Image (cartoon, rainbow over all chains, first blue to last red; front, side):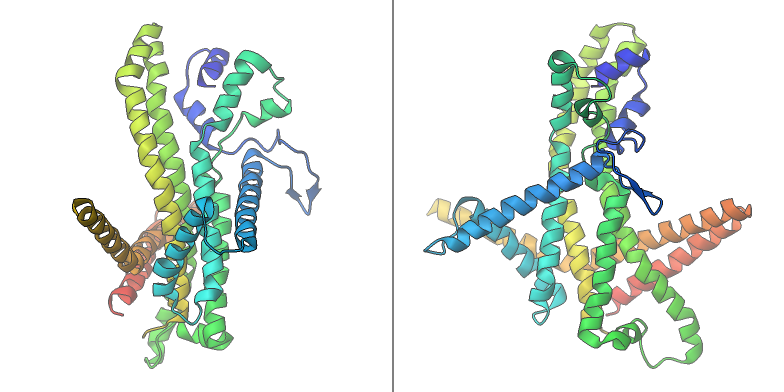
Length: 304
Length: 80
């Protein structure tokens, strides 16, 4: 795909290629056209499509394996179910239980689990070069039109969690859950009273209450930025290192220079960073769920 | 016997790692809140500066407020 774009544009522009690979596909050329309602264009871009695919994949795989397990005569998990159960148990016992506590454990574990599996799958799908392989196949075999379904699918990034809108939506769910958890544990008025420590002189509250409200809004913002920036950053690093090949062949006007740099530096380094990305994918899913559990726990177990 | 001891060691290391990660939860939350507050309030200040043409005062004020909010959240975690 990089080579294809280079051929069209003449000189190689690394910045444009990299942005094209990590950002969403253009809303002007959506994959599925949908009408505009209330001023919002509901047309499906590539990130929205990937979002649906990840959600559908998770729904089918996890529901199917759990249903199959529940229908067994002897309740002994095997294969995929065994791994799933280990992960579920790990998240319940070492993420949710220490922060949320035993009383509300079963209320908040499903939400945290959903977050974990969704983010993990969405991150991991971004590492699989599905559309790059499709682009290569298209270039040599299919020769699809630019405006056809396949042609439209080739533009834009695959990692939905690298889109700030997606992570902001996830963090909004966390934000609402924090308020819901506090309300459930202490009542609606009790939760808002818990924001500031009691028993201080009234002038202190004039300073403290705005700070607390800002702190409340900052937490989901930190979650949003952290996940999206981490997922975008890794992809940009890999793509910039791979761009060396084309930059050097442009610079020396010889393909040999590019291939040489590719073999010696760019490809080994990109492989190493991809390996690191596999760890990042898991760590980021883990950190998001951990922070969600900690924030929910802070609303439930208030210490002053 | 040897492999038994090795798997025991591995299980213990994993257990300790899990324990450490578990304890690091509140610290990670405080750290991310600190940097998030500075970024968010600094960005809001910057946008107000762009809008009102009052550079750099709202940016500086936002950054300062971000530091205050961030350290307040950090202090709440530390002095619990």
